[in-house]
Length: 563
Ligand SMILES: Cc1cc2nc3c(=O)[nH]c(=O)nc-3n(C[C@H](O)[C@H](O)[C@H](O)COP(=O)(O)O)c2cc1C
Ligand SMILES: Nc1ncnc2c1ncn2[C@@H]1O[C@H](COP(=O)(O)OP(=O)(O)OP(=O)(O)O)[C@@H](O)[C@H]1O
Ligand SMILES: [Mg+2]
Image 1 (cartoon, rainbow, N blue to C red):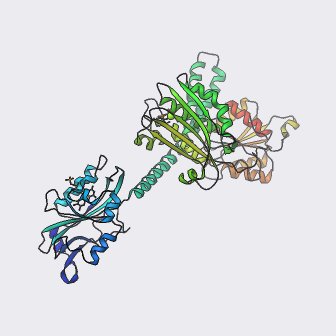
Image 2: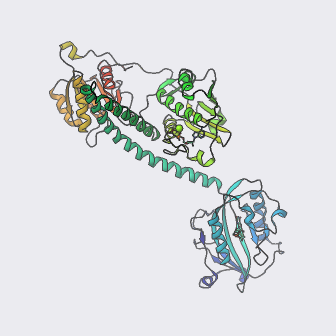
Image 3: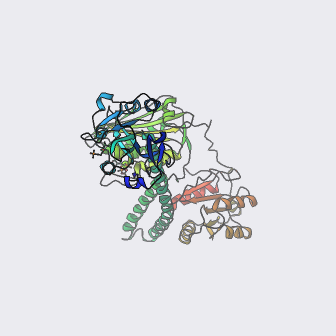
């Protein structure tokens, strides 16, 4: 809110005298606007915040100024504070257009009839105080139209005095700024999510390194203690690390920092294949119905993450129906009108939708449902829909949630239809390793800046009978490669300072084209599917377990993808 000067202060200022003294005004000088919306788009300086008039009364309607007030599209109101409860004595046509009331319904009433359940009492109190002090005031206040529809009203009110300073009227202008407010709110929300995303992605990244060390060491411990009494607690600790790994994956998905492996996917095919799992998840009380659109074009996305997203949404649907009911999983082609309304770039889109008959969400819950850690469930993490939202965004789609308390919820994931004619999943040439030909152990160069992670990888590979050398940075790795034969380069992507893993691979391939490489990352970094030289990149996500590592090493050595 912002209020204007009071009457004593007016006298200290030069007044803007008009019409040879017929009226005079106190210039606003930007002070009435404050953080309330000013339609001028800048601090109003020249408009009046209070005025002194020579001719009182509302009957004089024959001049251009009255015509202007009736013609403007800016709603305007005059009230008479000398009558009981400061009633409206004049409204222009634009006020009736804005509020949807008829003139006879508003004349004689105090303007507070525009307020309703969600009008902020503190803002109303500020208006009341300013009016009592006979000052101008400017606020943004939630009001309601005649049909009950809420709107944000940018309200400006100023006092009108006679030449002797007696208060005669209040004048007000109103403006509907609903759209502006909702855009502002959406923007703020997006900024907040971006900030949380960066924070959680950073944390998840470091966390993955730690998990990698914990899990790997547990695996090594299990090699020696597996059959002893210490085996069980180690296995329990391992299960917990894997669960922690899943949590960091959800966080990375939310932050749109997950490494997605895009494949050509038929939504219908995926739902059908996954329906057994869905039925098991829904349990006995909830029935699964499928409503699949035949002939749906395929999209390009990571099927594993789509399954995870679908599962999250279906579990929410189940949780919303403790007494049981039906969940419908449907697919559809998104029509042009829907695409435009969803503000998606031009193109073809398909959707997968989960519909439940559960308790639904209050508007406040629906608004916050995709926020990470927002949950209304005692045991929920609040990461389910955050993950879904991040995944859908990262796949260039849109997540839409419609929900009505008591009626149920519809969660729709929209994805672009793939432009590719065929999935390019062709593997590279099959490299028979030089080591095998020479009858010696395969030598792997491990490049990793984190000492613990590096030590662990070395131990895991050595345990599988590989010959292992290691380097803490890309530069050291290059020097080592110049001296020694190496069959496989296994490198982390992110290494603070110096060159990163991808740059290292490029350099290595310049000197030794076709040299097998395996990259590992706890982060997505939009890793390219292929190296700069066009060779398919074999990627291992952190945290990995022993078997993952060995599978991927084998796959990289043989230039093909692991199953
Ligand atoms: C000229 C004038 C126009 C007003 N226009 C509005 C309006 O558009 N919306 C609104 O909520 N309140 C408006 N008000 C404020 C209310 O009439 C009232 O002053 C406010 O609710 C505080 O007083 P109360 O606590 O007695 O209700 C206006 C007041 C004046 C004097
Ligand atoms: N289908 C639904 N019906 C009603 N409310 C829902 C539905 N889906 C989500 N919600 C609401 O949104 C909140 C956030 O959902 P989200 O999946 O992100 O977290 P969660 O389900 O609470 O926890 P988690 O997914 O980690 O178990 C839920 O707590 C619930 O209040
Ligand atoms: Mg959930």
